Length: 183
Ligand SMILES: [Fe+2]
Ligand SMILES: [Fe+2]
Image (cartoon, rainbow, N blue to C red; front, side, top):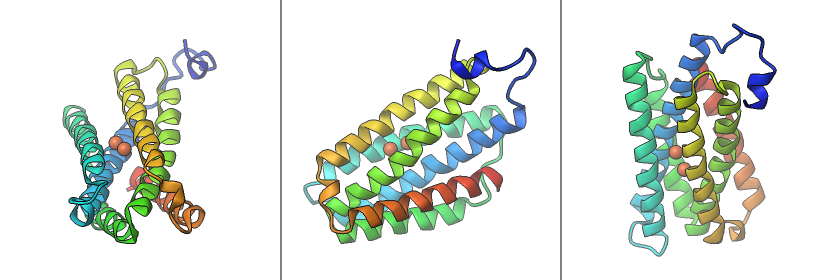
């Protein structure tokens, strides 16, 4: 039994409305990820980083499809902010790619830092209540961690202004999560 589950009283499960919010925000996040990589690929497709970014984009596509299915099966509406994440995600991807391959990789490091924490916290909260969903989150979290490692290996930290850039993107990602949970 997980730590979170041990501290929970009997009959004290995560309310259905909270699980709906989890699915909504995760779907929004994975959609945003596909848009970030779409923006990066439009700029960097034929560069050295192109193949690596393409592989990450394919993983995000799989993550998105899984949440599409979960939303449909559990009758959860997507976030109202979908159009905003389409534009903001693409812009973030394209702008960081225009700054260079390493800045594009720094963007991945920053986003995956936030998503790593996010999925871990969600999985802990779900614990044994919804094992299938928890396993999905943990599997995707492992993919996101691999993306961060790949981005670091590609020299993310060597981009000028790395600390400032990643701090700004982390802050933006947290705001996006906050908004997508509520709207
Ligand atoms: Fe993902
Ligand atoms: Fe990822």
